[in-house]
Image 1 (tube, helix red, strand yellow):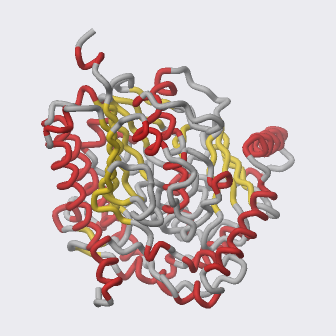
Image 2 (cartoon, rainbow, N blue to C red):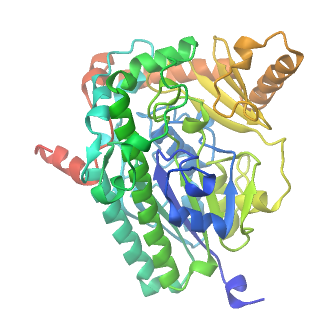
Length: 492
């Protein structure tokens, strides 16, 4: 056994924001160029059925930190961010003597909390320690005028987000180059914001893609799915109203360009790890917090349970990870906590749902493991719960008709078996199994009632509905530099 196998193993997590799982060369995409992620996948394992605990930034990141489901921690929405409790895997690693640092976006309440890191470098937290309060108004949603910005921002050039990503990349390179990294084992959470909108892409990466050659969205021109709750979400986040075909193609070119830009940043971080002589002794995990619909089914951004939104890319490489492998067992961002504890020798998380990705990567395919996601944030009028197993995906909407998809026969989720095949024995059995698996995780009706009750209390804490309508209204979180200007009262 060589020294790299016997030395303590480092853990480097690289997180993107809003990267859909199919938008990678290693995932078979015919257009998107992601050489750094392709190389990572070649020397490691791709988890092809990975899911976010919630298709929204703030609750997803709270679940990633806690290693637990949204309905168990109560981080329902974008105005209830993680604030150091329950104890995170970062706390556990730090308490066990491991240096654990964050570089970049966190989307927690603030840096004044003890989030568990030894150090937070260039952290982005929610605005004003509150976040996106308008999303709390699910029972009486106001118009969301900021939706027009998505199409309005499409184009070439730098943005505050791409500038921020370059600063994060430089900070990660500097941190990894410090000789102190060789003194003791560490864990690092490097969190980029691309390809999250604004869809303003630097020319060098936008020019990789010709808008005329972009693939059309799934179901383009066919209208929205025939489901009441999906229509509620589309009416609130009415992004599609502002996209004609030309603008849609330009938006996809910008999104793919930002994906390649993000891949460039991730590649620089991995090269810095290699230059420091620690590539062979570090588990590198790449994930996104959620995906992006990019016009599929008439939706943009996230918030829904389709694969492009609730599914996430997940690639791991390094000690204990098989090379050149694809694993179809369902995984989750909640598995990151278990992975960190296992790699770094911290105590197990009693009662938590996660399993180390190193164990899953080395085990046979497990159809008994259920993929799970839930949504209780802006635009929704009821809770949505997704369970995935084998070829099936079941989506439960509290008080409404469910959806059911056969992902083998219908990978783009255009044929809702719950609506079109209820008399079919296979469909009935799958619906029953989906509901059984969901109830093994939670009681969706009770969770839905609790989410609304907690959100009513939160609205009161923030000063009532009018305060939520007028305070902290934005379409994407300002960077740390922009938030500093806001605190100083300066124009952005």
